[in-house]
Length: 329
Image (tube, rainbow, N blue to C red):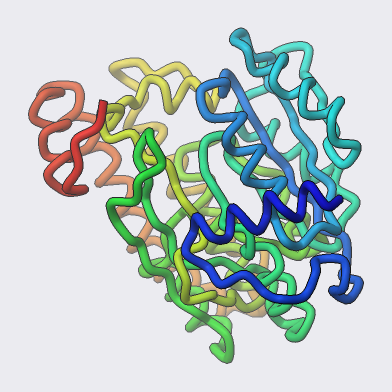
């Protein structure tokens, strides 16, 4: 317990945060949080990610790891941590079930009032969970809490900041519009109310499943923003345009003829999912009209990006590096 507290203190100092005078054990009891970590061949950054999670100053949580039949050293690392820390539970799938199902399994296993997905290569600041739980405890209408995102490179150095909106106090249509046009897909890695998140199940193994879930959740409650960059999203710019790898994670075979079908399926699924929560004919018309514009725009962007990365891979990666302003190994 004390060793974990020392690690949390050091980690907070590394993120440039102020270390409180009171001991971690003096905090009030909080609802249990379930952290779900889906992973497939994540040995490169998994150890660093797990160490960051274990330095959270909020310590009333369980950490569930779902290994999607990795073929690298992921299993050995996960089992090592599970043996050292009783709060960690490791489960390995007998075969690769696809990213969507692996994400969903963790929500099904979660026992906590709150739930958060943790990517096997990203980092959370030590105060992330405590600040999110504090907001959600005090405001029942909030179903998702997140923060600004800072992109980090392979060495963990920050190079870009992505901001997100706060939808507290907004009506359903205003929340939906904000999610459509202003919410980054990374917000899915915020802290959810488990019961509400399960209303957005099943998780779709399709293009843009994170965006579809966020727009659906926006109709169910408010999203709260912590205006601090407490989430480090690891972005390897040199992998920009790796669509084949992306669709492999979704268990979708990318061929020359199916991108238009995938784009159309994305539009159709987006509209069908948000319409599950319509309150009447007028509301449904608004959801379809607004969602159609945005989903067609995103589907078109997918087709353009896929074509550009396939026909001009070198130029595509150069443009990505210029956009993010970083060159990575």
